[in-house]
Amino acid sequence: MNDPVTRPNGYFLEDFNDALDNLFNDANFIAQLDAIESDRDDAQAWMKMLQNPPQEFLNAYEDAKNLYNSYMRLTDLALSPSGSLNTYTNSYSEIDAEFIGYYNIMELYFD
Image (cartoon, rainbow, N blue to C red; front, top):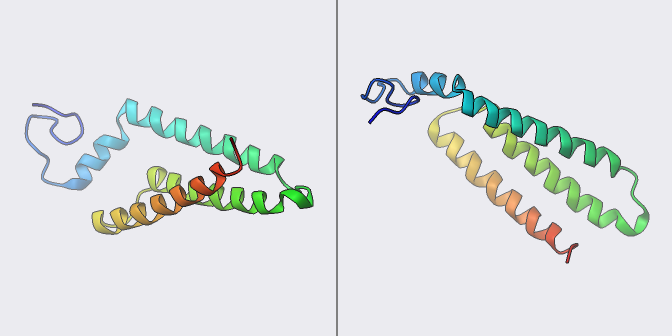
């Protein structure tokens, strides 16, 4: 079985970095990264519109900022991966759990 990223010739690549190069040159993956960047731009625009909330919404704004910051950290992992597989996995697990926690807090503000 061929996989254009990890098995382009039917055999697993010996060097993980070669597979990463293939991944970051794959048209579908590039489109996914572009979508993430577009979503980040949208989130940033929304956060700019939320600046200076009324006093009664300060707590919600702080919670939204926490969610936004966590979201940006999470998407940074997708857009600019770094470190070893172990450190990346640990970072992802930590930030993913953080994001879910903030997301669950934000859900309390909506029906």
